[in-house]
Length: 256
Image (tube, rainbow, N blue to C red):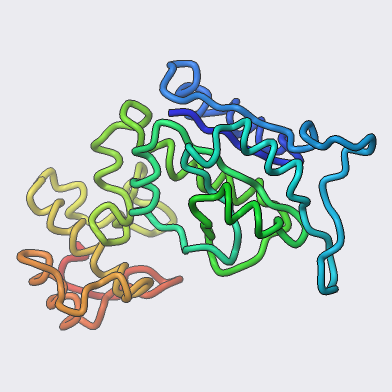
């Protein structure tokens, strides 16, 4: 998969593609990337890429000419082209999986008050927001997008790891622990060191349900969860939730 990221400040992005798991994915030929400086497509001597907004108002807007030329060179609109903006569709794991199926993805980073609407109308296929807040840097939003997408490509991360993550099954991921088993008078739940894999699987699913109920109840279907998960949801509710944000486990028969 190839990412082409268009930015006024591509150096912000460079370190992301040259470190950690991404670095290994690039070296292994699983991921390709190209960082495009939009200023390279400005034609005036000052390489101007922004101007005042028609109709008045504070701030500057990115001009259409360099953006249009840069996107055309990147293959847009024939290639899936994403503009990261707080006014776009809210990004989620399902969207990450959809975009991970692309072989080529162009991502446009905004600055200032955003970009001229005519570029969006003719070159952009997706307007995506990473959350209900505003950033000064489209580059930061683009890195969030890329990080969520590339890790879903085959070979980047093991399939087993992906299956256990938050949102993979519509639930938040269960809490996890490592050695030592007793730290600062806090013990790991006994079931996790019992060696009973069936009971461990049950505890993890129930813990995922309890945490989802506490933090993100809107993720739980109004019709409830099917099968064994539905039974465990009813148990969690009967037990009063047994997980509180900022406190952790407060009760419940499956703690230990």
